[in-house]
Length: 176
Image: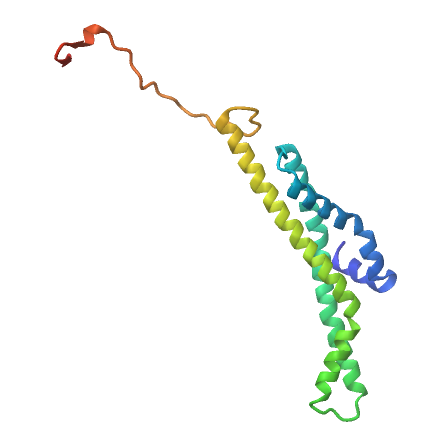
C-alpha cells in the first residue's frame, strides 16, 4: 500500500480494520520467532523460507508504520491549530492543554503505529538472524564437504608431498 492508500484506508474504513487485515502477518512473525527460539535443528531451506517471509512482512509493515507516524504528526498539528483558533486569547499555559488535546486526538492511531513499527523492526532483526545462520550453515557444510548447496570456488591445489627412495639419501643425510 502506498501512503495515500493507507491514509484513505484509515479515514474511510478505520485503522482497526487495517490492523485486522494485517493480523495474519503479525501471527507469522510470532510463529517464526517461536521456531527460531525452539528450533535448533533448522536447515538452510527452512531458514531461507523464514528469511523470505520476514523480508516480505518487513516490506509491508515498515511503510505503513512510516505513514502512521506522518499521519500522527499532521493530525496533532491540525488539532493544535484548530483548538488554538477557538481560544479568544492565547495564554502560555494553554500550550499544555493544546498538547494534551492533540495527543488525545491520535491516541488510537499511536497505539497501532507502535505495533506496526515494533513488528517491522522485529521482522528485520529476525531476517538478519536467519541470514547469519544460513550463511554459517552453508559455510560449515562447504568446509565439511557434506550436502553443500552453495557456490563452490575453484581452488587450485599443489602437490607438496614427494616420495623418496633410498637413492635420495645416504648414511650421512640427503644426497645433494
